[in-house]
Length: 198
Image 1 (cartoon, rainbow, N blue to C red):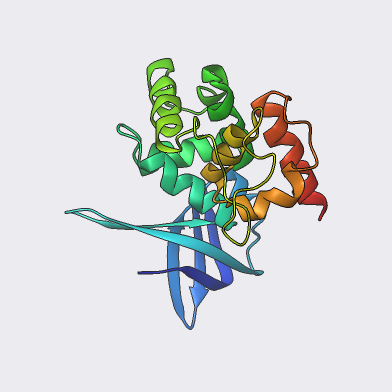
Image 2: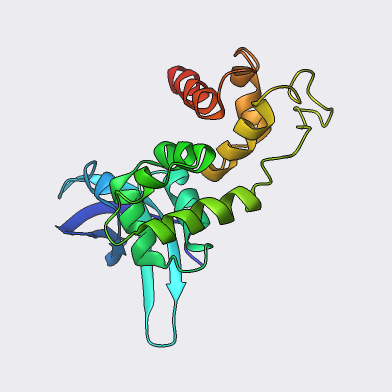
């Protein structure tokens, strides 16, 4: 229903940011990482997710589309509700979550408040299945199979980056310059670094 809200930040509280748009204040539940970049009296844009329950409608706001995409992916896991999704994204960046899922790093995910070992294992298991990390071929821009993308750990790295909402077209120019025999987590990290320098 709401794609984003943009306006003046009129109130901040732990886990809450209120953005006034055309005279209406939108109360958004948000992450610590998003709140770090907000200040009362300044303009901000938050990408939003509206959660509708029988007894309430809750608006969640995120500073980047990557964070919103990671949130939507996380709450798709059984046992992970919006509050747990926020806790994970408050403890970890979308990039760190992607790396943890790709490498099966349970310990990193349990850094989030309220996330135990069993839930962290479920998150990794369900998201690895969802993104089908075993696929053998990726499609390059234009729809043709990408030369060299089906070798080594590159296909797994490309699909793990899907957690952040990146398509193969987004990452192809960067990941193609890396050694395909590198570990999956290193390929993801190096690709994100290269994309950040662009």
